[in-house]
Image (cartoon, rainbow, N blue to C red; front, side, top):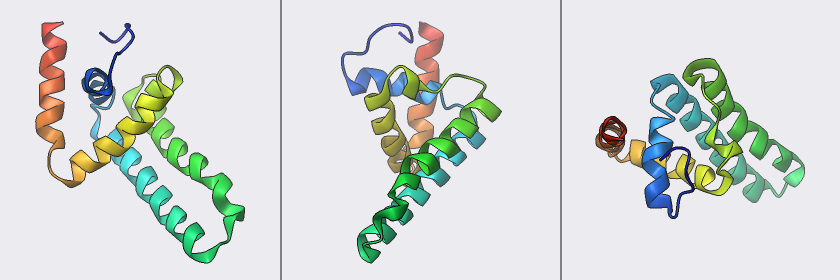
Amino acid sequence: MADSTFRSFAQFYPFYLREHRHPTCRALHYIGSMLVLALLAYLVLSGNWIWAWALPVIGYGFAWLGHFGFEHNRPATFRYPFYSFLGDWVMLKDWLTGQLEPKLASALAEEVKE
């Protein structure tokens, strides 16, 4: 299903997880996402919005480093920008709540069936 158009995020997310199978790639995504949240909190609390330009640089910079340096694939953002953005946050949530490993295992098992 990686080459088809996804009709929903539920269809996309297993593909997204398979594109993030390398633990260092995922760790870099988590770091980037948490730094984005920290910077966003700073911006809101300080009112110093001059640093807002750094939000996408931090978020995508860490993620793309993970893809190009460790995963060796093209970030899903290039083909599926909205779903990929949402996937970053769902993957972080799944990792923080301990749900990531079973979902990743399931996504990898689906790949074998395809």
